[in-house]
Length: 267
Ligand SMILES: [Zn+2]
Ligand SMILES: [Zn+2]
Ligand SMILES: [Zn+2]
Ligand SMILES: [Zn+2]
Ligand SMILES: [Zn+2]
Ligand SMILES: [Zn+2]
Image 1: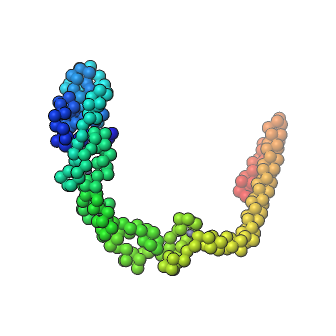
Image 2 (image 1 turned 180 degrees about the vertical axis):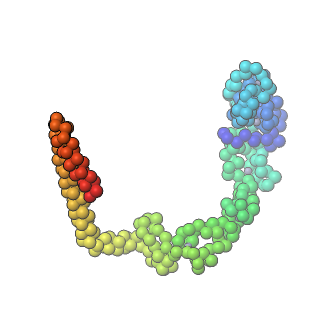
Image 3 (image 1 turned 90 degrees about the vertical axis):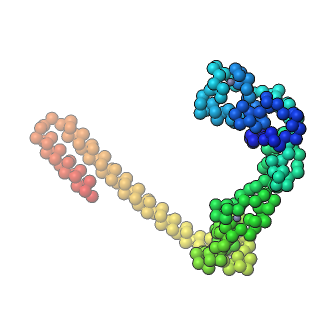
């Protein structure tokens, strides 16, 4: 259970209420209770966690406290029944302890914000929000042509100006034109068939392109291999020179080789 605001004023059988059922920090009825081993005071797990993380001790400043889950108190809590927190808004449901959190997320009388609350500032009970959102001018709705999300009040302007008029079909992945959307004539099967036949028509051209590309790669490789052969030849010559004793001859040969290498790296 995540909800921790079980207000004791909504408890139906008030005679069930005891101090030990309340959180030592926020005073609401316990959910997920944890007890300090030193002072025996109980807290919401969430309240205590927040406190201990910030302050580092039990809220009563107990030394050497351990915090224990207290299952036995939960048994007592589970016998409680509550009015819905929205009873003043009109919800007459009577809720078991275990059902409160779930009910809060679904209660038709729970005040909720419009999806476009940032702009329209509308907050109303859940059972009315759908009706509001169906007409709220600030809600984003998908343009029927390009499927972009556009604020409802701007849809007409969008259609007449920036709208590209095309969208990608989610089923076939192909582009649907504005005309097709207007006439509702897009058909994934015939669209795909058309696409494939276009592909087949251009297949020879594509194969030609690939052949040319491969030829170019082969020429490049041949060229590189030739360069490598030349370099290896020069390396052999340099090694021969290094083995030779005659100083003068050596220098001469070295110059030749260096000159040769220089011309190579220029090319
Ligand atoms: Zn609490
Ligand atoms: Zn304590
Ligand atoms: Zn309710
Ligand atoms: Zn709204
Ligand atoms: Zn559009
Ligand atoms: Zn399609």
